[in-house]
Length: 494
Image (cartoon, rainbow, N blue to C red; front, side, top):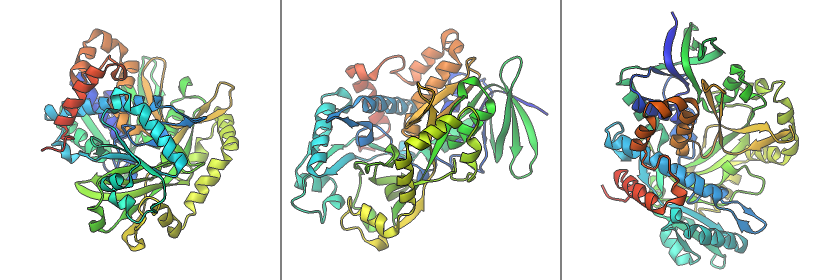
């Protein structure tokens, strides 16, 4: 028997749960199904221990403000900050509507700090602050080169540090820590209680073919019984994290030709001493090592995962051929096709230093990792820290203007010309910008309904800034931010 739905979403993480919830709010009569190859929701990249979980607002992540020829560029930081505000507006709407549980179940106020040492890095952070503090999006950011004040902000980072070493820090008190696993599970639980929603766990999308009349026929396999079934859908979303690369290839849409993936593994040092965890309440980001991929910016990170407070340091990147943590070592080799072999070879040849760096990271000893930690926490004790494997990040490889290849750090939507299929590729900032990204999917794949069925007005009701630019409208940003902070309890009250 063939199952027929309006929308089939592959992957049950932050992206698919956000898209499914948006579609349900826009039209509750849409038949939406989510298929997940694992046994539960949000246990791959969205799982709390597998991702950075920052709530990327670009307050503290220095890789979003690159420096070129001595000049700092904050353009990307402004884009990410505005996108995170869009996510918070949607979460605020869901909380006020009773769709989401009390905010502390998935989001908690946690100051965001950047911290650097050495005069060159201090000069960089000062210039970054001067630019950002003049922009309305980063109003309230603090800056200091005073070790005593920084000591008050982040005592673990300053205790035991050399007295004569130049240091600097920026601080944004309204920063947030987001448990995206809890967020995704809450949305899926809500959807399961609604009509016209189906969750299929333990099923893999094996293949897909376009239908002559439009839409797709997707072959699913039960990973326990091996039983196969077909689903017909008007719209297909491939939001399976690193697995989206190979699914996009199976779709054979011309827009997906030439794409490949560059997988990167990760590990965390996790503090096992609750007394130490209590002494730090901040996300402290530094500068990435020379040759490191942007997503490997080191940070000493307070996290709230499943209601428990944790302290992590990392991530330590590494070379891998898996596209998913629960994936296969053959993922990378099997993803090499005739249309992407040249871009992938080109990227490989021109990024040998990155490959060597990742291999070196993977071969680090615990002693070496602790040495890195002590740059941020000088008095860290070996016995207080254990190593944990994080998730995989698959960076985008695509053709450049010359037909060769380039490695992209970020996220990208690849959609078919008729809007019947969309795939999300890439990683950071990922889940933090999920609402903006999924709205982009809706704009590309449901353009007719936006124009003719009142969906624009409904999106405006959910996200007050929809259709406007927060980067250019200080009054609107101040209004939506105030409501977000109050509703999501990021003001430290309630």
